[in-house]
Image: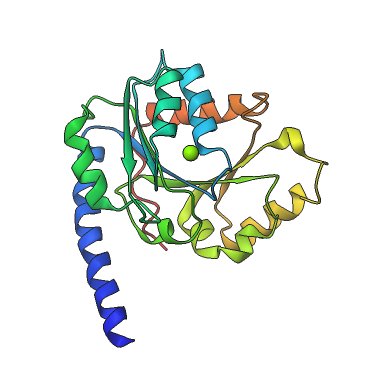
Length: 228
Ligand code: MG
């Protein structure tokens, strides 16, 4: 048991070293790097498709789509107008790590980007432990999930700076309670910035776009995700 813990610690410290180098590069080049995390099916790719549709002319965006298998999401992002898109197929690993990002970056020009979106593998547990050098983690939750997710997966919500609640067009079709999910999330992390959107209808996305443009305008906020 102790051996397992020691190995895990070693892996994480190696990851932190690589993540720090990534973070320095992002900060030096004024790239806002966002690590998108959620359960499978919450709408990470849909949010990115919408964001490309709305802001592709204004912002230089790079996108890394992580999945256990298939390049389906990367293909979707290219179809949505993404010019600098890379798929990271982990082949079984349940999260992205800093080594994977370090390996993929040389294959895409990143230093002139405004924003680098890293879509993590859909999973609310493992990705919370791996720093990718991002400025912040953005956690998505959808109204088709349980509104107690923040309580079940507190690590992810504690380490995220932003929570996007997607599929608000489906509110009322299940027992999901908007006030309760927000209260649960804020109980875990009182600093969470919350957006309520529907990537299907577009409702609420204007505030997300405005926030994103604000981030780029004020340049990279320094690492928040490592405070906890
Ligand atoms: Mg996806």
